Image (cartoon, rainbow, N blue to C red; front, side, top):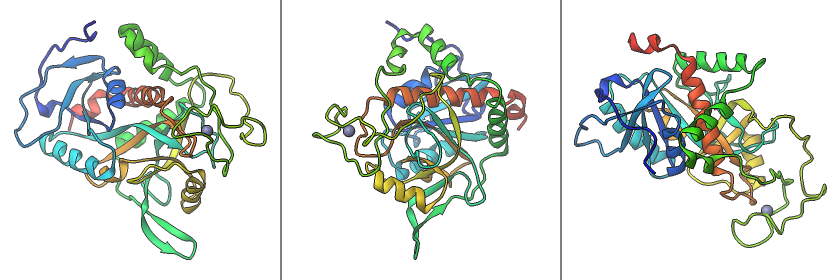
Length: 321
Ligand SMILES: [Zn+2]
């Protein structure tokens, strides 16, 4: 079965104003399925080794790149090359999966967290860099500004979500109608279990928790949601170079910078290259029970949310640069 979109027109690098950056193959697949149009690739400068996918979303010309490896250093290299090839990028969206930090907000698997500035940071903090103080490690905030156009789009989305549903399920359904293989990115038929801190995964390796106790003593009691639609949260995202698989460590990171909602591995490398924000689908709770079962769905919810954000931004505000 051929991929449902055929590349039509070919534009120049200068026509692309939105950078969509991801790290993992399934994040790239989710991104690609959010395109409204696929474009032919323009000839690329020889020194730029990135592989790009070109297309449009809600009228904006978007270039997608998958950095091929997790980690903040690789992210910085990819973004620097991109910044050299594309001279008219207005902003970047770093879109992918992350571990949820359910200490402050009721975060569920498949929910989306958008990095939003607070009084302390621009929305992202590096949890593995910082000053050691008497209260523990004080993480490094990234103070560079998220571009105004993105901040405005986040505020608009936040306002819309007060009295209407997000478009995430619609965009996932549209992508699946066009490409039936996208059903591998749907909500898995699995229980979303949040285990209590200090209850360590039972069994070998990254299992599916079949040996873990799911009673009130071991599970956090949470009210079932009335809707299966993911919830979009706005807050601070912690970024670092190693995977967090321990609820005690997660709680420590949450305590070191109050208000963290998710932990991921790329944003810290990008925040100093060009103006970007990160949009993250929650695929686990950064604890010992973490496994890969929710990764496709979380990649899809983040990608669909990124499409919703792009759709809010008027096309003219970018074209007029
Ligand atoms: Zn488990």
